[in-house]
Amino acid sequence: MAAWKLPLVVAAIALPVVGAFLIGAFLVGGPALGFIAGALAVLALLVVAARQRPRGPIGTAPVSDGGRRILIVAAQPLEEPGAVAAIARELGGGDVAEVRVLAPASIGFLDRWASDVEAARRQAQERLVTTVAALAKAGVDAEARVGDENLVQAVEDQLESYHADEVVLVSAREDDEGAAAELESRLRPRFRHLQM
Image (cartoon, rainbow, N blue to C red; front, side, top):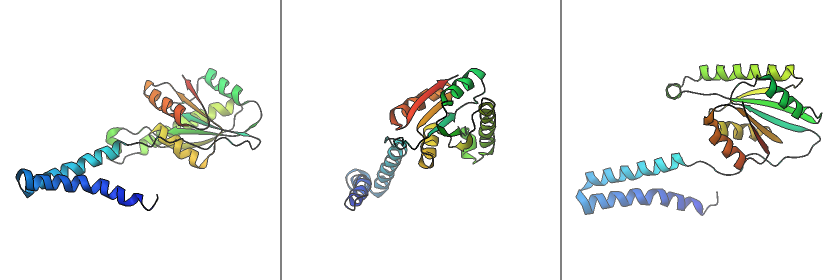
């Protein structure tokens, strides 16, 4: 961040809080009301900040180094023979250097608050075992990773260290449509969505 931006960020945070306090304290009804107005301004800033999501491009542009790198995102197990065969055909050109399978951990609301993520990680690992075994049976060797519960965040995290030329999302849930649309608009590598 440029040095001149930090004071602007601090001012953008502090001015609404101080302004709400001063208006509440001196113009409306005393220090107690000023404190409440300042607290509400802080709360409003926190809500706005929490709802913001980065919208920049994800991943790096594909680099031609003699082999393709494919990231398969298994939102559900890839075990249906037709889908496995389609992916194996797509990858069967012989120029695939690596295949990595990523399974986002689907953490429930209460589990997230209780920090009980083991069951979700175990389910994601089971999805990975099923998918990697089905791909191996079709002649495709793949690595496996468990990712963040947010599908887009899981892909973004994985592409930090694994520079894929193509990302393939395998899903059946309608809940994944929004994530698929966001991935399609933000990914630099080629993107395909296989619906089961």
